[in-house]
Amino acid sequence: MSRGALGRAGLATAALGLMLAAPAAAQDWHDAYHAGVAALARGDHARAAEALQRAITLRPEPGRNVLTYGTNVEPRYFPYLRLAEARLALGQLDAAREALERSASWGTREPAQERQVLLGRLEAAVAAKRPPPAPADTPPTPATVATPTPTPAAPAAVEPPASAPARAAPKAPPTSAPATIATTGARPPRTEAPGTRPGTTAPPASPSAPATGATPAPSHPPVPAPPEPAPPKAADTRAALVAFALLALIGAAVIAWIALRRAPPAAGAGAASPRAEGATDAGAPATPRTFLNPGARLDEQGQEWFGEYRLLQMLGRGGMASVFKAERRNELVALKRPLASLLDDQQFLDRFLREAEIGRTLNHPNIVRILERGNVSGVPYFTMQLVEGETLLAFLRREGPVEPRLAASVVVQIAEALDFAHGKGVVHRDLKPSNIMLLPDGSARVMDFGIARAERFETLTATSAFLGTPHYVAPEMIEGLGAEPRSDLYSLGVVLFELVTGQRPFVADTAFAVLKKHCLEEPPPPGRLRPGVPPELDAIVLQLLRKNVAERPANAEALVIALRDFIHRAA
Image (cartoon, rainbow, N blue to C red; front, top):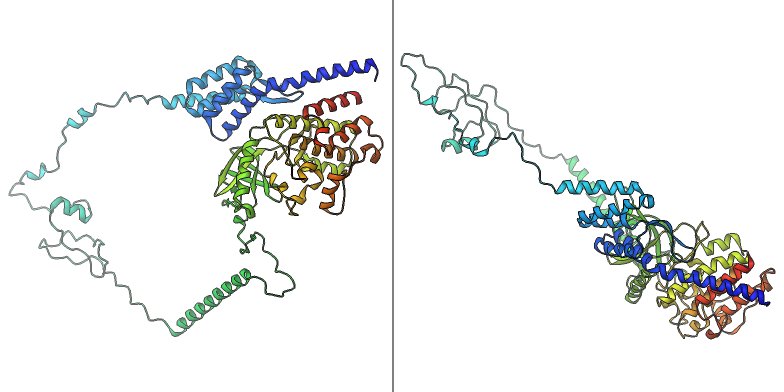
């Protein structure tokens, strides 16, 4: 290499070093901001306020597309609006107003429309705390109570003149029997007409009835008593017996059908009976649709819910878990939960939750971040960012091998994600194209950082879980030496090999033969399988696929530098 070329390479390396130093500066405020947004989404408003206040302290200037890691950006950095939302939820109205005022001081850096919505909520909360004003026109209560009122008994005390003709007493308004008893203290005469039910009131007596206390005759014919029911006919009795017999036969048939479904296949049968959809490994009978997904329920519209999340569609189903597109409070996420067959495996459940908690610490733009974890009816779950795009596996199946510079630009983003994760002490252990997402803007993101994947490599037992990804396993993991950060680099080397050639470096008829090749055979240079691959990229791939861990790149950062240098030269 010429001295000029070395100088250019040195400048490129120095510039790349400055770019790589940027994530360290952006990490604190960006982590704090995303921690606050995630806490706000799950209703932990106190933690959200604390994290957002820290983000503001570290980076007070809000805005859109704020530079974070290298060339990556935060599209919506609105810490003051999010902080005001958290303060409102906590009832801290003065602090919420202060956050909105600080947001307004930055002009259009934060959206004015969202600010006005929050301001309206703030004013409504303030108005709700004000005591209602006392009515001005209401007279004082004591004056109203002290005002005397005439009693209706006063006119009754005046005796009429002796010469005045006798008049009938005025008719009293109708009252119920209990009210009459409570007023007079005497039991009223029974006025029920013959044939009426007890408790019903008889028609009022005629004004000309004598006041002798006897029960007057009713002014209309008495209501006749209901006729006695006729004895059932013989034909009706037979019909009832026939219906009862039919129901008994149907019930017996249903019980027999269930017993046949539960019974194991007879000895010597040529093949086992087909399993009903939703049956478990223990041989349980088919279950209704609402129980096919553990912990789920159906609403009146037939929509499936899992706790507070409305499940919109299934995004994928693997050997250990299912992933759904879910919605909660107008926020879309990807929700992952174990399969029903693994809910009794406590070791798996413990690892599922532990690794989910580790994944929550990985806040990097090239990592699909885990937002929260929880439990619904004994079924653990965690939610992730919902990103639009497709897996690298789907892309390769559709497009085949890609141009070397494009392949390097995808892999360098994965290397940046690995460098961040390794710095946090997290090793992926299952890096492969189906765990890498490609977004429409060309960015790449890694999924499933160590989520319940260590179990696959604890032994070489030929289980279905292990046979899923033998093509990407590092030799030291096959030999039982465990995984380390450079084990991820080996897997990434296989991914890069496949991107530029369209095929994997080691192919065989059985999984055991593939694992053996990983340990014993050297891979071919990618340029031998696909002419046109530059020798510089060949050298990077072959170094990643070294059997000896010490011969691979020292760390993911060194790989990032090498790939960036290649991309710069190829341009």
